[in-house]
Length: 263
Length: 311
Image (cartoon, rainbow over all chains, first blue to last red; front, side, top):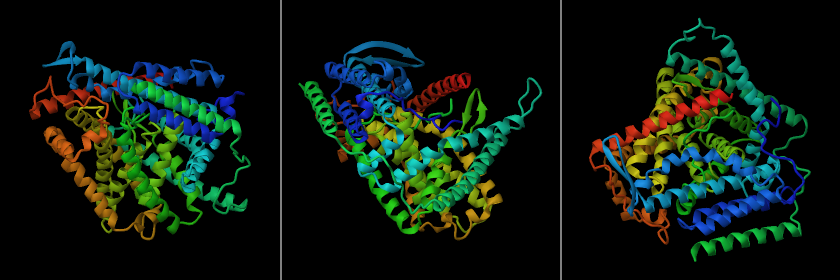
């Protein structure tokens, strides 16, 4: 597997790509918080927030529909909110029978359900854009600058570094299982569910041992190259004047959004 | 598809700001202890180890086994991580995994990440390690059995806490979300338990030194037994209460002011959780749970089919 198999970064020459990663993390988080704070059914504010996402897409030069195409990821979770359709009192809109019970969708329930979906959908788009315009190591450095403890950011950096290595390892294990699972056509190979779970568990144990031994080797190799407990970067990440300007501008827009949502 | 999202990752937008912040506070305080304990007890060698172990948990979540109808069991790994690495390191490793899933794959939100870390990383590690630690002197069979129960309970605890947070945020109705989430995760938890037990059995068989006397696994304080025990007890006590008598739990929450705070009372329409379509009998709760399980099971089968077709 190639090292960037899990990478979500899209190389482009744009203002958003050039911005300091701290700014991007901060604005993304503030935007998501702002969505969570917008009251239910403030359609104008929701539309403006979407415009904000669209414009950010445009500035990133990734194309106006870039995040839209990838944003369905959060939709399955909507199922969990479906009960608000029926549980919030309001004008009945539609009543139907489901099994032995009678379900009534109310206007307030629908309002809340749609609002939750929109908030989630807008937020996930911004998060998608963040990793599309920021290299992951830069993102981790931004977190470090934003006072996330070094031990956590270093673990995340290692996790990212060895993700594809261990995924390869898993694929080797899965391929080995596959190639030993011959079966007569029409019947399933191997034993019952319990037996299959046992094999999967053994594979997890095997993967653990391989990872454990690999981490030993990695550590020795790092010490051999002068590792003393922390990682260095050549990328200094200095905030420039346009970084400050962009932060202020974006936060100003989000603030206006909030005001419009509450008028 | 390389990566199968688990149904516990809450996306942004589903939790209210107040609930998100409360979860962040609990998570940050716990992680603060985890980090200072880890810094005290471990050398610089442990950082690459924990990083690779985080990648291990991530990769191990891809190991699946076919169950039936296109669905497959796989694991979250919180209990396993805590048992083999020790509780604090296990929590840090799980935090890194959940953070990466949210940052890179948008599996779980950013502002609600505190809640996701709490549900899937901290609580699972506390239960997994606490219960396992309570039988540290016993025979292998007892240890493995308890590890299995702990893994199952850890998933149930994650599901319970997720449900409670969704309910406090006004996103789901308590008497539906609890039976549905707990029902689905009772099954998912069995997969978790089986993989955890067999993985541990394999490690004990091939590298007994990693789990024996003097290993990280044996070093954890005995206080973990109480922590794990108390959270498990909460799960065992709250779940039936919540599914059998949701109004009781709701009254408690209202009395304590949780519900108002959680739902951002200043502007939201506070639903008075009336049940227009289900009575308040235990039967209707069970029925709701069964419907929830059925719906989610159907969707999981469809998603499973879809993923299979793609790969």
